[in-house]
Image (cartoon, rainbow, N blue to C red; front, side, top):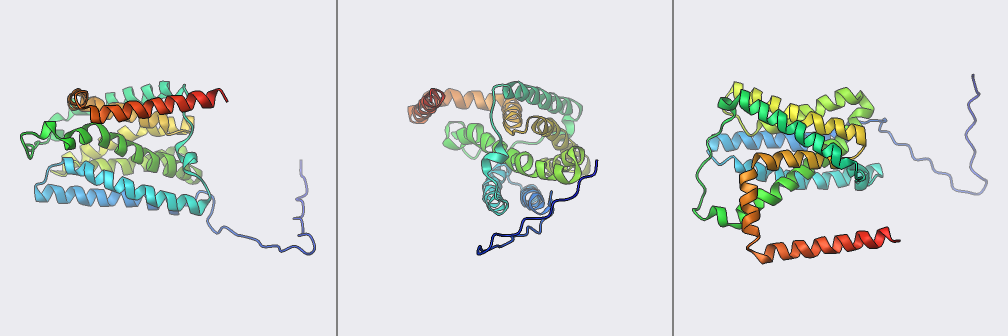
Amino acid sequence: CWRPTPEPLAPAPGTLFRMVVDARPRGSLQGPLWVLSLFTFPLVGFGFWLQISGHASRWYDTGKSVLGAIGLVVLWWLLRREGTTLRGCVGRFRARHLGWALVVGLGTSVISLGTWLIAADWLRRKTPAPDSEFYLFSTEFMIRALVEPVWITFTVNLLFLGYALPRLRARFGPVWATVIVAFCSGLVQLGYNLQGPVTMMISMLLGFLLAIPPALVTLATGSTWPGFLGYLFMVQLRQLEEVFLALLLLAYIPVFWVPLVLVALVVFCWYGVKAQG
């Protein structure tokens, strides 16, 4: 039934009345375009420069780490303008998210393995020899095997799925929002292989497909934690040999694992105190 629109309340006499008008429409594209463009296009250019200069492809991950840090600064600035918080982008972590993370991990692993089996001849890259014969025992190797994948996966999920995806959904709907984010993820994956048209198309298709499961789960749960944990599972599974070797070496260096144990104990104690009120 029709109801009359109520008239706006007038300010009380003697009070200072100031109206703040937000000129940005609901589902504005300004923030998502800033985030996606800042992370995607510089990485593609950096990957092209690595290919023509003959540098090792592992430096592409270093570029992703640096741009991830810059993206977090830009994200902080955008969230301050919107009046929202970083916690709202990340979402809450719940126990049922572990099941969704397993779904994402298995789904992305199947996509990665299937693409590799079909197009292994195009996706196989020549890995240059390490800069030093002691590279496997260096701090750089442990950082690249254990720390760098976690940082890259967290920042990409936060920028693409935590910030850009919900705002694109408010403007275009869930389907087109997922397509746009997956397309940008394909461009990021494109930077790994710029050796030929076929290789570029396969790499871009792989990045596009790998972004769909975490994007759909993020839309379903409202949290980036399942996508982050599931995608990280797939990434570490692809380099399982390096991860296992890094963990084995880490066990013999107390200066690394003792602080981790202490931090874990502090976190568990804090959660226990919080749970007991």
